[in-house]
Length: 229
Image (cartoon, rainbow, N blue to C red; front, side):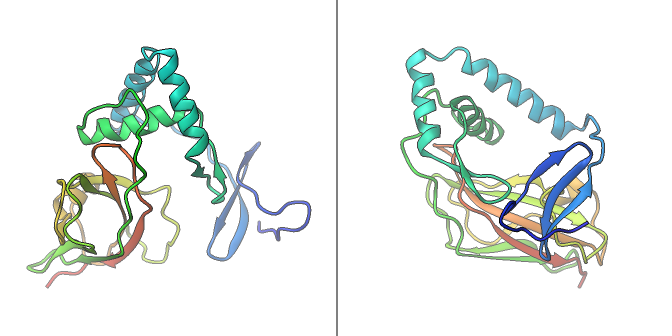
């Protein structure tokens, strides 16, 4: 079921009862919400473990540190699913930033970062040749800055027609610092999704991650159909 936003309702997001408001390239629509399934995949277990660790660390901060994170969150807004800026709580900001640092193996922060998020990529192209060709992302600028790394999300689909991928994306690779283009991602994608097959569609969203501050840039998207030459 689709709807046209009007004066009373300009945009909708989230669920009420068994109905979820969503949006695709053709505009807003409603869909029946599926009952969530508890995930026990290694990725899910890792994410839960990191979240638990960082939530426990939040309790060890001083009152002054927690107030600093609250102030940071109030002045560093994030976009919600409708693209509307909103302020997180200090706890959410602390856990979100330190969870990324934890995933990347960096030095965790007790105090909020003083720097701003890194600049995003200027261009991104995905090649998906599993033969003797290349399976990598090519990007500019290159190489990245000394503390910056690529944060690579990806998904693999058997249908090339699906365009909405946000719920399918998984973190597949965090590059080395100052990574130069191109970055080969075939092994990382296959480790996450299995052996690739000609005709499948691979989608990537790639951002720049600051290994010191834990901050992420905006993401660029690139898609490709798997071929073999």
